Image 1 (spheres, helix red, strand yellow):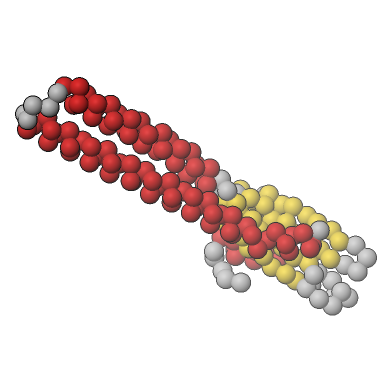
Image 2 (cartoon, one colour):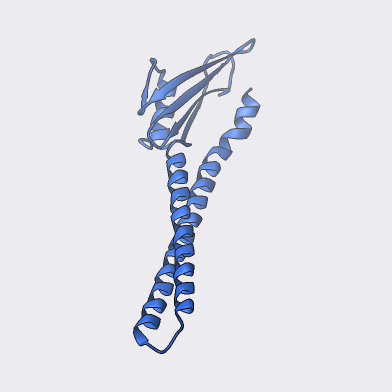
Length: 167
């Protein structure tokens, strides 16, 4: 179990960063589309105000183009709101403490891993390694508060995940 956790733990922050990058790209796309709507609106106002003999069909075509762009922008804003809401619930805060749970094991093979969302909801996973067995515990965390009593190592992992202390 420990090799699997060691393999996955380094990638948790990258997954959160990838989600934020995706949201940033969508934000830039939305801003670009808004600029296009403003540009088309400005062109229409100039065209309608000049009285240079443009046919009504041409003017109406411009209206249709503007409506299509506005509809696209509206859809993008809805999708971006959904993504931002999803990102609020992702597990993006991680804190880990390795320790020697039993003096006869001779190395820091036990660990406490705190994994939290931006709002402080998540869990603390603790693995206690002994020569003849390994025990794993999972304790829920709500609003940055553990629902069960924590060991010193678990408290430190939670503080690291919350950014209260550095490793």
